[in-house]
Image 1: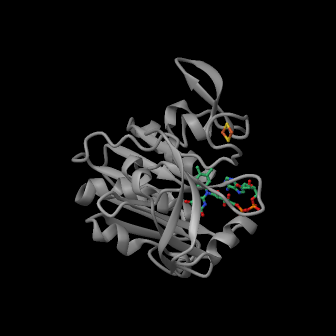
Image 2: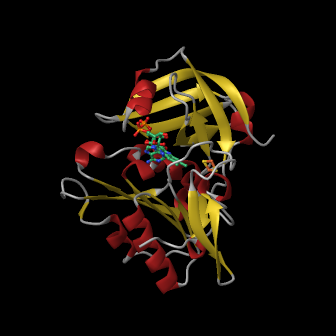
Length: 254
Ligand SMILES: Cc1cc2nc3c(=O)[nH]c(=O)nc-3n(C[C@H](O)[C@H](O)[C@H](O)COP(=O)(O)OP(=O)(O)OC[C@H]3O[C@@H](n4cnc5c(N)ncnc54)[C@H](O)[C@@H]3O)c2cc1C
Ligand code: FES
């Protein structure tokens, strides 16, 4: 199965912070087909465009998918009002996720804010071989720390205001670490810094881009991004060619 539309019943809902919610849905075959780093396109009543939300966790045995999202506008506010027992119209699994490779190598996961949830399913596979560096505005906005720890990951937190963990940029935490592969998701300045570190250390790095999207399946130009391969630049689609890319293939604008 590539991707499909399914009406998925919400089985669990949690509020993680003032504006971040955690939904688990029954997704049957979609959960079976999904992999770390892929996303779902969620229908919001009254809106022409679906809303892309990354798959945070997959439970194939239970046939469920977990989504963690932040309220940004009307679509995510509607989603935050949904309750267990309600159904969501979901198009999934979409895009190319993280290529995990050998999960016994020392991996480092770098996430910023709402870029942290898309890393959980991949970090889970590395267990004690993974360090997770997660950056947030302050202590109140920290999410999923215990979830990563439950799977054996070593979690280091950075906050902008110093209210918890390291006071400063999450990417500063890369300096003291030993690793052979990087996986990242978060704001563009953070991703650029991660890519610079990867290039300086000669370590492979995969980053997830969260470009604005329309169709989500490669049929429009709503998510064009500049890529390069063998020295040649070209335009690709974040939804179909990504959202996860090898850091060396991304051409940053500006
Ligand atoms: C591949 C991918 C994965 C994502 N995963 C998550 C996630 O796991 N958790 C989470 O909280 N958010 C995630 N986002 C961002 C999320 O899609 C937007 O916050 C959401 O679409 C905003 O919709 P809205 O109606 O609330 O806001 P509005 O601002 O009203 O949205 C208006 C339009 O802009 C689009 N849009 C607005 N902001 C974004 C954005 N940052 N990225 C893409 N489209 C946007 C909407 O889809 C919609 O078409 C992801 C985005 C992408 C592209
Ligand atoms: S959103 Fe239509 S091509 Fe990517």
